Amino acid sequence: MDQIPEGSSYEWKRWSNVGAQDPFYIASMRDQGWEPVDPKRHPNWVPPGYNDPYILKGGMILMERPMELTEEAQREARQAAQAQISFQEQRLGITPKDTLSRDLVKPKIVKEIGRMVVED
Image 1 (cartoon, rainbow, N blue to C red):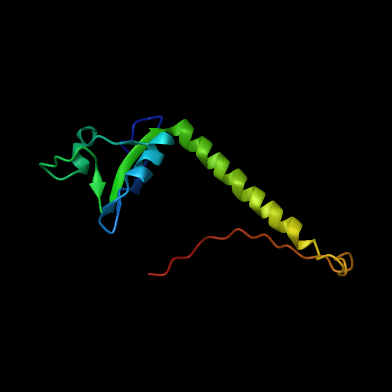
Image 2 (cartoon, rainbow, N blue to C red):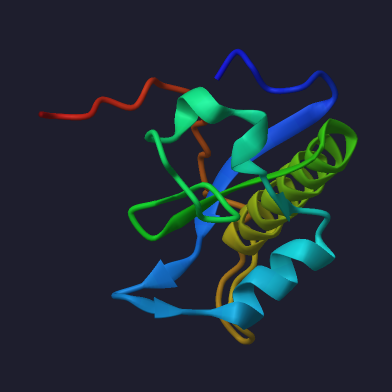
C-alpha cells in the first residue's frame, strides 16, 4: 500500500462478523480517529464499477487516521503491556501469608525475543 497519503495510517477493521454488521464497533473506531477510506481515492484498489461508499473486503473495512494518533495508540499499548509484565514479575516474588519467603530461592526470569515461526 505505497499509495497511502503521507501522515496517514491505514488498517483493516471489522465491518461484519458472520454477515452481521456491528455499527457500535464502527462508532468506537470513529471515536478513536478512524474514518473509512473513500474508494474514489484509490480506484485501482477496487474492481471496475465498484459503487460502495467504503472499501469493503471479506467482512473488513479499510479505515484511516492520522499517523500521530496511531503512534500514540501504539505507545499506549506498549506501556500497558510493559505494566502487565512488571506486575507479573513482581508477583513472582510474593508468597502467600504465613508461608516461607522467597529470600532463599529467588525466581529466575529469562527474557527472550524471538521471531515467530508460522507453519504453512
